[in-house]
Image (cartoon, rainbow, N blue to C red; front, side, top):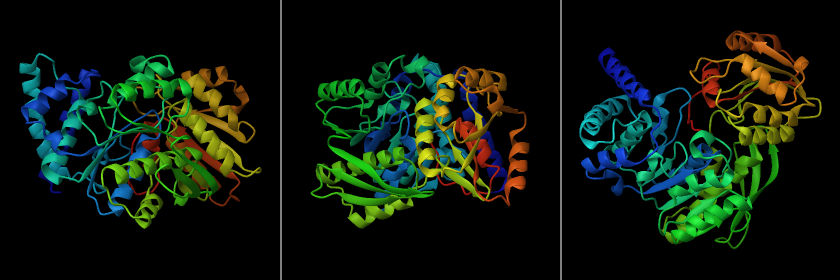
Length: 456
């Protein structure tokens, strides 16, 4: 892109990010007003709407890869991003071109100004405008056969909830964003279940009875069928090693069990893959989607999702994981306990957001205590990032000994020293960088890796 084009792209992003000053405004009225002014372009698209606390991004990626392998054109909308803003809006795996983004920002800017002046609903938020841009890109520019559509926060009042999908996916429910969604699992589940639409099938990876009761009630109210993991479908790990695992999948729609290889680690990825496979089974059985078994196999094997148990340096071993809440930390602990050997020494570099349940996250990390040499706590450049003092208090309250904790003032300098000092080590020492996905995004730029896809 020439200098003039790059300047236009930079200005477009600056304008978008400037909308952050309007904060979060739960509600659909601004989105509905803007889409109504455009003739409701979202109605021309087939969406798979994905909500949940953890696993949304991985599930979206599994679905997209399987559908693309079968020859379908696929749009994908996820959030946030790791390195490049355009990761959030993709067509057949490719990020939205800068020129298209600039043009769509200009279209959106006019609507935003009109919405603020004419609608009585105030100015749209940054996320609402990004959602609008994604709809315009898919409906007017690329026209994909299907759009894999991830919620931003919650579901019922999330700006993505202006679409009527062909399938609804709710990966799981966890205690996250309680200030907006509620203080109990059933309360949060009701917000997530708000994306369930009349007659649209629902696939969930949730297993707990108190949460399933809420989802079932919402599905019954909408006369939608709820397909539950552990009942209508399931998956189990057969074997696992770094960068690969094999799973066995069963479904009420299949006469026999199937075995698949995944390129992502962790029992939680086996469940994410199962949710994605069941969604594909529903599409094949009720909506005449054509996917051959070999296409499904290739799609699953090719799926990657950066920042999730991602090895960015095999020697010395450095692994990144955006475990940004208690459930994410628990999944990380379960995975590391399976992947490490008895003689593996773990070194953690942790940073998180001040509004996250840091004490509970620290408590969950204690599942690794027998293997952990040191937990290094650091702060990164982000408005909501926790101070190192707050992190230290949370880990002490979470049961960690002060002798195991170390404050790192400059995480970049620490990483440089770690990689240099351990390059010739025997491989028994692993550095695991975890916590906020925003932190992982910054750390990832330190390593020479290729951006593929990103989402929390």
